[in-house]
Amino acid sequence: MITGDIGCYGLGGAEPLNAMDTSICMGASISMGHGAQQAFSRINSVMRTVGVIGDSTFFHTGINSLMQVVYNHSKTVTCILDNRITGMTGHQENPGTGFTLQGAPTKIIDIETVVKALGVDHVRVVNPLELQEVTDAFDWALALDEPSVIITRWPCVLKKHSEQDKQEFGNYRGLCQVDVTKCVGCKSCLKTGCPALRFNKASKTVIIDDSQCTGCKVCAQVCPVGAINKVGE
Ligand code: SF4
Ligand code: SF4
Picture (spheres, rainbow, N blue to C red):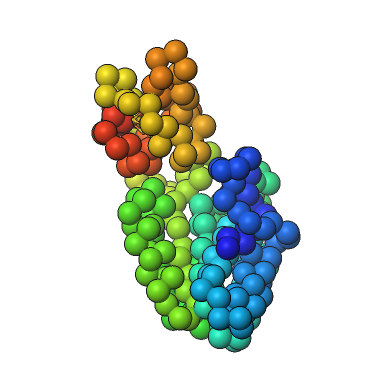
């Protein structure tokens, strides 16, 4: 069961792209997941819960919920999507970005440090663009019988990068293209939900909209025939 929260990750659209089972209010991903996990465990169900929450929402109302998870011996997996900004409501700064709402430099509150301070012993920080790294992290977390946290750390593509972002993430932007002579039209890449990918009904192949692609290579990782390649930096 995936308990969602309020943020851009909840705007994935209609099924099957919206993976959240619930979306109630800020912070509810962790606390609802905790309650559901307690109920599942009580009836000896193998069902597990994953709470998905953004970085700014975690600072706003997720910290207290995660503390209760630890305090009550829950075994939920909490996934904190740290895109280095407050995405959905318009890129406001938050305690993790290094700037105040007025744009003045300030201390960065490090999510990993906060999570460990709350008593979570199992924490991993992953690059969400590396799909195998993410899969491995979930396999690791779901095998545990204690609370765990996976922090996916990568800046929002719309964010104006700070000097710290440039140092940490470098200039990753570029462009990918589909080799239509290789594409078999399986549509696996479309399941990533990337809006830059389009299916051409006439040719039965996928094309990439240059104006929307950032060259992240997520679609290339799921293509079974290696038809997608990065062509520009
Ligand atoms: S490389 Fe990334 S941004 Fe470009 S089409 Fe593929 S998934 Fe979308
Ligand atoms: S995953 Fe590869 S082969 Fe399948 S539709 Fe996309 S580009 Fe074509």
